[in-house]
Image 1 (cartoon, rainbow, N blue to C red):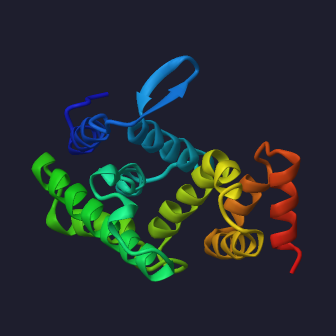
Image 2: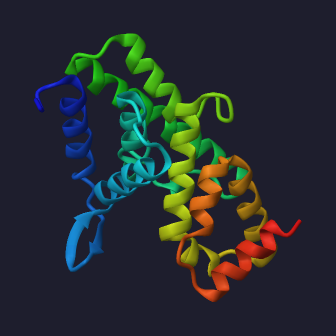
Image 3: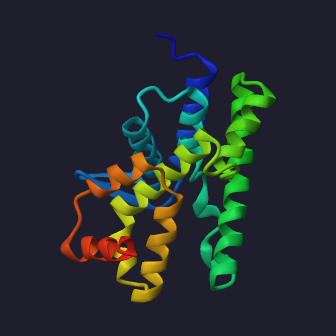
Length: 196
C-alpha cells in the first residue's frame, strides 16, 4: 500500500498541525499534544461507528478540532451566544485549513469543500459524513471530558446540555455511548437526561 497518496499526505499534514498544540495530555505514561490525541480518538470512534468510512469522512473527522488552541473560548463573550459564535468560527477555520491541505495534497476543490462542509457541521441529520463528525465529537466528549465538565456546570444546565448532545447523535452513537465506562455519578446524570 502506497502512503504517497492525497489521503495520506493530507492526514500527515493534519497531524503535523495537531502536533503543534502547546498543551499536552498524558496517555499511558506518554505525553502527547492534546489536539493530536483528540484527533486520534475521533478517528478511533469513526472506526467503531462505520465499517469502511470513506476517505473524505476520515479527513473531516481528523480535522474537526484543528488548531483550536489558537482561538481560545475566553476570547468570546460568556454565555450561549458567545459559545455558539466561537464554535462556528472554529468550524469555519478548521474547514478552511483542512480544505487547503487537501488541495495541496492533490484533492479536487469539490472534495475539499465537501470535507469543509462536514467540519462546519452543515447538513447535520441529513448528510452521513456530517453526522459521523458530530457522532465522533459527542463520543469523545462523553468518554473523556464529561466527568470533569459535569463538576463545573450547575445541574439543570448540565441536564440540558446532555439532552441537546443526545439529540444530535445517531442511534449507533447512542448505542456506543451507553456502553462507555462511567462513574456512578456520570451514569446517573445520563439516565436523568434520557428519562424525559
